[in-house]
Image (cartoon, rainbow, N blue to C red):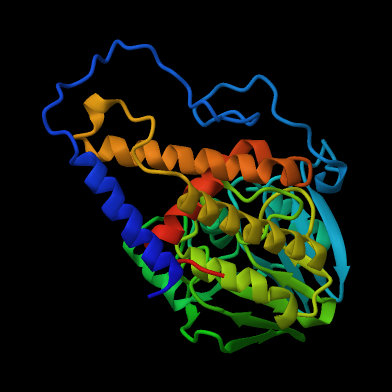
Length: 360
């Protein structure tokens, strides 16, 4: 049995044994004063109003956005372009007869059409590639299709499955799909070559890597957040162990110079991937250490010992606080948004260790 499995079995037995200690206590008084956990550190806990979050480190700042245009375009060479409005990111590839657009976030919206005309005046968007099914990344696709009715949409078969279930008119169904895992789907049009790969379950089942070798550009969405703490709960990853595996292998599998990661205001680099691997390794170790060192049942009101949900909630709260306190000294100044989502990350990580058996 793996260490994580033994840990999970032992703590579950301990928690429910603690909860069974007293079945005779009456329910507590809900008007009792609220008392914070004694070891809460300097980072504010969730559902706490924050007047001012930590400043963004210079290394995490986005590229300048022209306020008149509302977006920025970066020429990556060999027909590849990075476009952002400061929060979301897409890639354009110019080919002989038009443009390929990878993702269509509604947050950028009609500015995608303006950027397309700026990049390749008079050329149509002939193809769209969906990185994955989430509406915040492809929710403007219907508008693209309405403007260019002949556009061909490419996605992984798992993305098609999700979109068929959703029945969302904002996200037209792809007309070209592939269903290989770990194998490359070669996509060639108008003198441009793209390699599409579904590495394994990660952020979302069907979330693919889009590789443009000519410009050394890799697009992988919602997995790496250049210079930033990941979005809450490890970016809502459907498969946390798979996300770990994908990130750890990224720099070895691709010789990229530019990473289009989907969020924040600048492209990423191999150094950004290394930083996130280092953080996630520390996160895993901090959560595992807290799960093993925090004792279930301590500090629980004796009148709540018959309530296993309360006992478990108290235990997990203290595990998460211990995890946050362990990480804060080394990380609070190294990633933008650390103070915003570090509790979410510790909560997601301890759960993955207990439930998925995540181990490094």
